[in-house]
Length: 544
Image 1 (cartoon, one colour):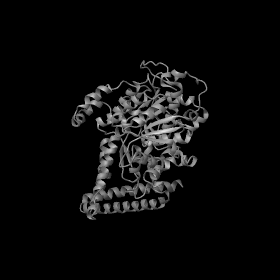
Image 2 (cartoon, helix red, strand yellow):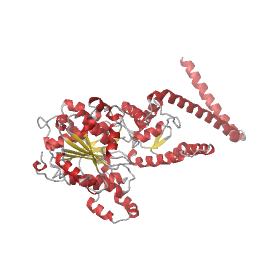
Image 3 (cartoon, one colour):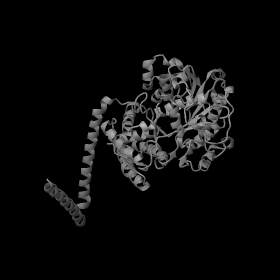
Image 4 (cartoon, one colour):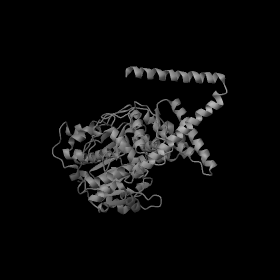
């Protein structure tokens, strides 16, 4: 389909939804999702990232007749783009694709690129190839660091998006441009609809203003620029949405807004995760016994969304956008809180119990974490359960001639957790009408193959698989080592009991035994406990 064949569009700034395109009923017979992607050439940015990998795998497995996947990849850490792609497809994530089609890698074509360079550093020959064959673009590339310097975040999340859109407008056969944003792009609002809100500043003017500024000056004015948003990530993702919207009269556009993307729910297998970002690092720290306290509101919704559900929605949105060519950009809030809420207070016991059943190897302490929304209580537990043990551990390392490291680990952990506190202590309400209406457009088979119905999530089962996934796929620990890991936890328990006993003896000898008043208080407390014990024992005897 030639881009010039697209119908004229209007930009009235109103809410564009699937109901505006199809009304309340289906628009007639459309090709299934797999049928649509058959023979298509797809460009994917950010393909070596967490979501990008899952997108590539799902396309290859569930749309086996796709013509080719062009992956925009940059050389990194001495590896060529070909090496990076080879390493990516060699991981366990692609095992199911490998079984079905051992030659699947032939459908993958790496394209050299760099988001920080003009024109994305794509060579002339590659530009000609892409503009001549690409049918769908999935823009997944972005920096997800919350503390990214503003200039760099602008370059990666906004300027790079502008340049990709410029390239997309040259593509003769482009049918859909799908942009991956975040549900927190508008986190300064309590209620977030599936619309693109006016940006805090015109992106072009901001970019021009910051070009001549010294990095130190930009750093100083960043808090005033981002205003009531918590970080440069959410700020620049909001700007990027506006940049994408500006092209809705020239391109068929959809925007996906996932919340906190976590391990896979079902595909290609439960619990797959490959990084420490977001909740994964917190889970691992809790499982290792390093994290003992977390500042979060127990009743706040922890809006986790499995990565495979996000990708299923993304592919369905690409299919629908290409075939129905909506007049304005369609936005999909990909969240769970509205239909299947799960709260931060529910996470802690599930994670701790899971890691006690399936312990991580060489844990620092037995898993045990405390969630509190109180700042002072959290600081107390950080001092008692984090910093004090870290000082003791580092002292032991120094005395044994080793390099101290535990305090450094805790400092990094505290920094990472502090960046999450804004999100773990607040609630948002996202509308998800477009997500529901899109599901209604799918055939029963497509609803199974590309399932993004969050109501089907069983959170207990999901968190259990998530924790096991961090053990197997992030830490690369063998499940056969669980008996030894359990034995290590029993050893840590015995050490804790011994330490507590010695501490009581020390307190007795140093403080209580030398003071008559302290002894009297001690004996009063002990006798009171004895009376309570005798009372309950007598009550139990009478009952029997």
